[in-house]
Amino acid sequence: MSDKRVLSGIQPTGNLHLGNYLGAIKNFVAMQNEFKCFFMLADLHALTVKTDPKVLKENILNTAATFLAAGLKSNKSTIFCQSQINSHTDLAWILNCIARVGWLNRMTQFKEKAGSNKENASIGLYTYPILMAADILIYKATHVPVGDDQKQHLELCRDIALKFNNDYKNNYFTLPEAIIPKSVSRIMSLRNGTKKMSKSEESDLSRINLTDTKDVISQKIKKAKTDNDTINEKIFDKESKRYEAQNLIKIYSNLKSETHDKVLKDYNGKTFIDFKKDLSDLVIEEIIPISNMIKKYRNDDKELINILINGSMVANDIAEKTIFEIKKIVGLA
Image (tube, rainbow, N blue to C red; front, side):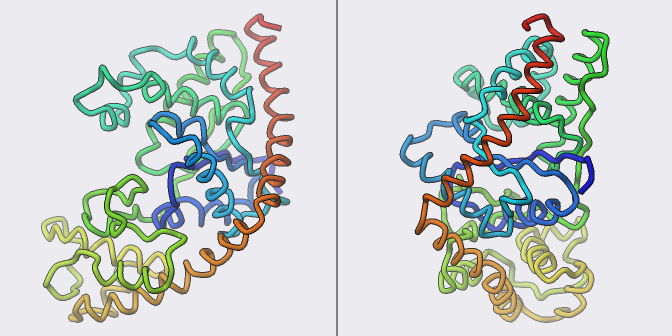
């Protein structure tokens, strides 16, 4: 095990889906053999949208069960709830005083999520990237796995860490580096190939949930939006605009660990009717064992809760040491 540290997390805001699995969790499982890993249930971040308290509690346990069902090991990785570590919010306030308003105003995710009604957006949504920076820096993470939509947040984290080092004339924070898996494709909605697969999209047909049954998966793949053209090697050409077709090819190639070109060559000239049958079999083979394990873990919440408690204790020990050192630097201790 190297001295490299990874911090990442997922908001417990609904059923995790195929996009979460292929885009994040599958990579988490691989990372735990190479890094010292901290994987958090980002429940404080989940509060940036209105959430039913009972639903949030259930989602926390479902997300924890999914982490374990997908292959994360509590004896290899620290799995914990963000809200149980007070040092996250302690550091977030200090970083609020380091970061500049202009930096936050450039965050494109806030603009996208707030839309035209920015004045009614929550302060939490606006300062979300500051808490994210605190999440990373409190564990002195050296590496952070990020997708395209999180690159800007990590850059902000690096800017804040650098300014802290300069303001207090030290090199306390190591600037975290991004891990951007080259082989992972962004998984899009099954109903709209231009939108990312999302827990919040209204139609359940837009995503494959990690708790779906075989029959449900088959039906969703069967009903997934495509076009009437056959599969050919020009699907990924910019001018083709076959976004839904591209998405299904990406899912297949990811699950099969094959290049897009290889998949297109194998199915060249065939229709999506045949392709969907094979894709459905692949998804079922990958997801059903995870779905079964999620149900098994949820049958005994005591085990889940104990894993989260133990993980929070480990995380808290590290975070408290970090925040004490930071408070000494800024004059609060």
